[in-house]
Length: 177
Ligand SMILES: CC(C)(COP(=O)(O)OP(=O)(O)OC[C@H]1O[C@@H](n2cnc3c(N)ncnc32)[C@H](O)[C@@H]1OP(=O)(O)O)[C@@H](O)C(=O)NCCC(=O)NCCS
Image 1 (tube, helix red, strand yellow):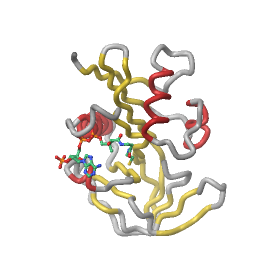
Image 2: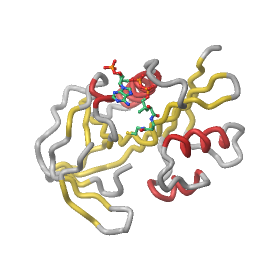
Image 3: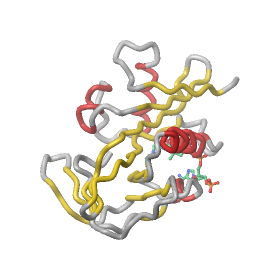
Image 4: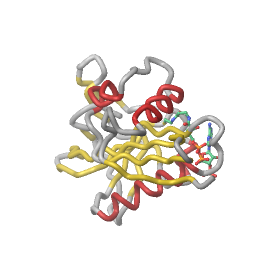
């Protein structure tokens, strides 16, 4: 059966695919998984766009794009944070996550967004999509509400246009997603 890609803003709680997205995310991120999608959204904010992969009625892939003005050194820069990247068990290892990231990059390049950032459990997954370890001192709002500054393990960036990623301290101006 064909895999179908859909791009939406965010997952409305009563959307036909909402339950499928919830199951997918809760299976992929079992630690402290919230039961409802709006709990994801209250953690990280509402995504600017969400990409879904569906096979028939089943949701088998998800990626959220958060556009955010961050600070790099003394400059305000529009960047994307990619989060909630999940592929259903049984559909992994087929290039679906790589395809979702590629689609996200296309969306971002069309909007002239120079950088994409993500926080990987497994950095190796994103290397072929152009992500490199982010060694910048990174300020962000932690889950406990405190602002912290550290070199974030698993933090990665990709250059989407012709702008080079600077080695300056950055401020995510919000949570890491
Ligand atoms: C991580 C995850 C999204 C990968 O999805 P996937 O569709 O299997 O990944 P792909 O098949 O597109 O593989 C992309 C690359 O990652 C590599 N890869 C995939 N899973 C990997 C793993 N667990 N460890 C190391 N490398 C892995 C593939 O070999 C491939 O490498 P290549 O592009 O150089 O050939 C999926 O396993 C998942 O949902 N896991 C649970 C949730 C999770 O951990 N999300 C990531 C949060 S950062």
